[in-house]
Amino acid sequence: MEYAIVDIETTGSYAGGNGITEIAILVHNGQHVIEKFQTLVNPHQPIPYHIQVLTGISDEMVKNAPSFHELAPRILELLEKRIFVAHNVNFDYSFIFQELKLAGFNWKAPKLCTVRLARKIIPNLASYSLGKLCQNLGIDIQDRHRALGDAQATVILFEKLLREDKEGLILSTLKKTKEHRLPTHINEEDFLKLPESAGIYIFRDKQGKIVYVGKAINIKKRVLSHFTGNNGTLRRQAFINEICSIDFEESGTELMALLMECQMIKKHWPPHNSALKKYEPKFCLMQYEDQKGYLRLLVSKFSKNAAAVQYFERASDANQLLLQLIERFNLDTKICSFYSTAAEIKHKVAYDDLPFVEEYNDRVQQAIDYVNGKKSTFLLMDQGRHLDEKSYVYYKDNTLHAFGFIDASNQAAQLEDLIAEQDRCTSNYYMTSLVLQYAERFPGKVISKMS
Image (cartoon, rainbow, N blue to C red; front, side, top):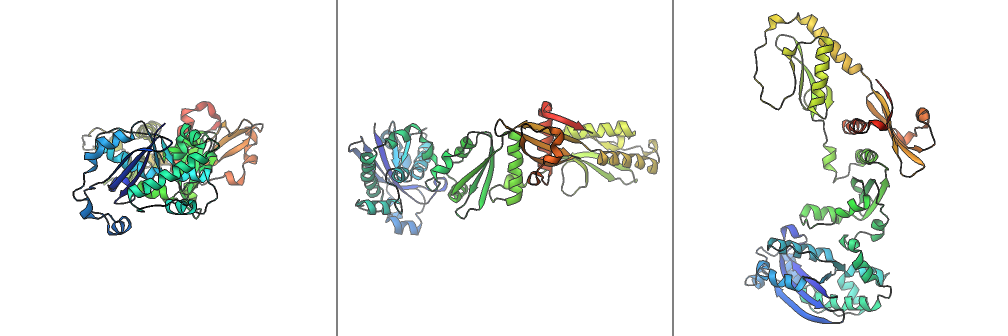
């Protein structure tokens, strides 16, 4: 088993908008270094002044250095079929992955992070930064914040970890490398306790404030997906750096996860949940008065500025309702408009063929009153978070009234008395749509229905 112990210097903190200025790779066979590679790299972008001060690498120094593209074949040769080792491994890995990809190479490797390994094998130290760790362990670092100096210090640290790993933690980590996909500032225990079941997960910052809420069929798998891949954009890095702890709540079903997610977002408005905050209906049935005074019904795309009789997720549902109203209240198709993606040819309405305005508008108003007065109530029952529990969703008078969990032995007829106060909710269009669509997909779960 061979290791590629790597350190890089860069122009910035995220791979998406920055470049490598220096790289060192020390190939290790588990006993000692067998090959050494180090070079400056021309990043083809200015090095910020504060980074020049930190590393001592200036624009002048890298001006005639090779580009990463030129070095890529040699770097790939050194990394291939070896375990990638670095201090805070995801940082170095993300840059090198990005640069190799830009050079046309599809490279992946198993990873070991000396930060995480040191926390396990040498616990209870005040700090696990490379500088503090080496100071506490008596490891001398030559040329701090230069790639070769830091890589050589990491080699000594890694050799110490290999010697003191009495429980085989390094080998077991390689067999389950998921923890090394996590940023080092996130507690591994938070991740390990996550279940592989449906529910919501909650990311909190260092003050404990909720910064993101997500839903999942498999909570552990979904959380891990946030930290895998090599999207090095500033926005993604800022998001990941903000996460300091992870909580979760199991839901039993996909629908309950969706509702729980929405309710928590409404309560806390996490800064990274902007997509769900903006959720709006797609179509609506509108009413308006034309120049002749006739009330018209129109199915159109949703508009915030238009008063709607009813909102819809699908145009076909809105068209179907309008057709029912035309037939039930004898409305005239010439002044009712269905939604269509095809270009419509406008015809001049022959008002002489229409009833008197007052008579016709009375029919339209009856149709509108019919829609507003039609109440639907039903109950959805589904599996709970364990065998002794059921989940329920109570849709009452055209709105989501409550959702939660009850003992599996309780009967649905007793539900009104069993609803806990915390189960009641303030519904919105999105939550209502979720429930109606779920009831349509799974009619067998609708055990009580009234119109």
